[in-house]
Length: 389
Image (tube, rainbow, N blue to C red):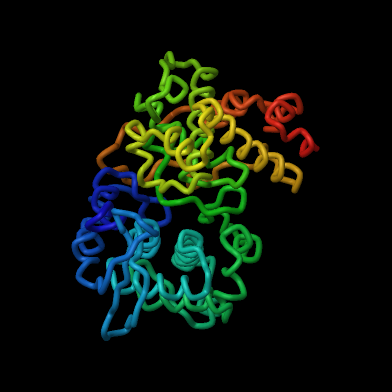
């Protein structure tokens, strides 16, 4: 992380088969053999300086510059894994300078690169399959691996101009509604949110469960605690942070394990700790840190988990109050299918029932298994009963 930042994981993700390619239709090195062009070593050739969060010893960030050419960039943020995945393998492009340009455009407009990459790939696939025509796009030809068209479409989205601004700028869900004509086959979103570029079909199931159960659907980091626990990795040196055995097929135990990991991550994130350090949390004594900074000498590991549960429960209740209904939060058709080519993890695709695990995950929080509604009694115990609706 210190040398490359998260862009150092590009080749690993492609080789392992968990980095989605071509709008989630492909996976693996055979589908994208040119991955070294977008990996950390090549990215660093353009880095002009490095930076990090205040007092961070890793400093995984930086700035890049492209001095000339069609994607000239005076100064842009060093792109992370998600941005490069969005504007390289996901659209079959291997021009790292185009990724820098996309980063610059999105950052200046305040546009999320994960969502933008999804809606661009969606438009390209619709164009390739005849759902969109040159008349629809205002003469802009959209092809896989053609960076000029991809970057022009990104510019239109960011500046709300032309076809990109009128049809695509509100994300995949709205774009599908506007285009129609069978385009939903190629639209990837979960509850209106485009998911991050981690193929849950080949990982521990917690990411897939989180995609369809979080009060802000498709969030990818909030599964991290559950993933680590399922891999038998403790989240710290306290009994409350330890993994426990989950017998095969025991959905109730799995739901409780994921809920424990989720509570931990909610509190961990609320403290401002970096998600990249979570993998080392077994060596991180967060309780002593909090006691030292806050002066709460009697603060315990259970208090930490309760704080995470309180945060998550408030988020859950807010989203339900605003109309979120989990029975409508489902994977789109593309994510139910397996990739045409699976890569190194071929034959190891998850066959679990994510919706059934979601029920037990909700139960692990004390929520209603079907609706996801928190318990009034538990909210009162957590001191937030006044927010029950």
